[in-house]
Length: 406
Image 1: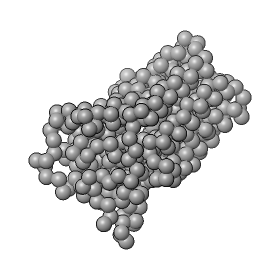
Image 2 (image 1 turned 30 degrees about the vertical axis):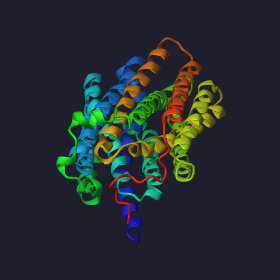
Image 3 (image 1 turned 60 degrees about the vertical axis):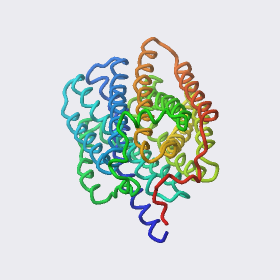
């Protein structure tokens, strides 16, 4: 165990920085959508489609790269996904029209969608059982760091230098993918597994619905769908919602930055609780907090109420995300872990497609924010019921054939 802690820290840092760069891209997208509206004369529905096409790519990427990770290894697939999203981001900075921007956002989304479940699986399989959940939640906390960088870049760079410069900066992270070859190590459990022991794609998909994993698969698909539906519906529209509530674009960026700061304590509290109270109940608690905060934000009128409920929304929602990434890989054995986690994330991304489109369509029809955020509240409550009645507790359970620092 003497060498385990430094090794775990290094793995967390290397994978976490990749996570941060991905989050920076997604975070900037919400600000870029708001900036593109006047430049390209976009309607609310067109704005919603920018977020949704990214989620279509994320759905495809999560499923495809999750399956590939079970066949060819977590590390190499992780690096491929990073190059996918980085190169796509750089090319999207050169676009001059809406259609080509959508096409490139699909490829950016595919890389991002594959990277997240593959990275969480890689970390889960190389961390001691007593700190596995906490480490994966801390990995997810880098996402908040990426959003903070995105908010800072969007506040200081986009208004002055434009959204293209911001995207070019994000694209430079492609260089980091090359460094990852020297900083990451393949999952030792995967290395010990012979290629012939790895199931075919068809068998892996069928195994997800075996009696032993049926409840887990159903639960994860419901929870991922509802969480991603609400997250992308709310957060991709956050700067634009503030503008529609009467605040200037610059002020909306600043207020979103303040709300984003609450993400970090949300992760850290979840990281501590997840190894003391367990994954199932911590996830349920943070999702219930998200549901209440969504209702409050939808009904908020004054600036103080908007900021308070916006910060609570960030705190609870991102704490739930961290716990979900820790919980998901623990539902499956080694042979189908990447496939199971990737499929759940892929199903979730379907919700990410529908969420932004729904918000744009409802705003265009004059539907109030109270109703819109009420829909997200109901979706999250459904996820909580799925966890309570279908979920199992995995705290303290060893992942089969996983190196536990012995």
